[in-house]
Image 1 (cartoon, rainbow, N blue to C red):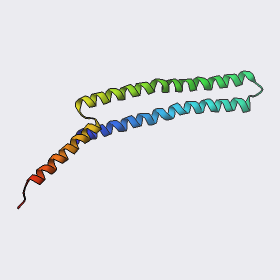
Image 2 (image 1 turned 90 degrees about the horizontal axis):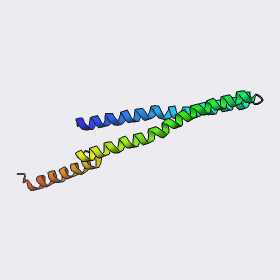
Image 3 (image 1 turned 180 degrees about the vertical axis):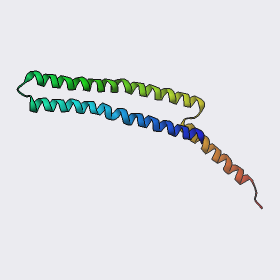
Length: 117
């Protein structure tokens, strides 16, 4: 039970990390779009300001997308290593379920073998 509680806490931590990084990555695109819209509607005749605003927005967006590109393989690699470690210990959810089903079968056999007065 303690091990499962620890795993649930770990999954919550991962979900919390993703809930933080996901919106931050998305907000970099919003920043780029907002600056592009401002440049188009407010400074259409001033090419230098328009280009400066669009460039600034693209730099922010590139940072967010670069983080996403680097974070995705990292997250996958960490998950893969964790699954290998759990498989070696026999603690994958599928392995735990299989063991529990075997325990239930064993328990049922013991109950059927016993005779109650």
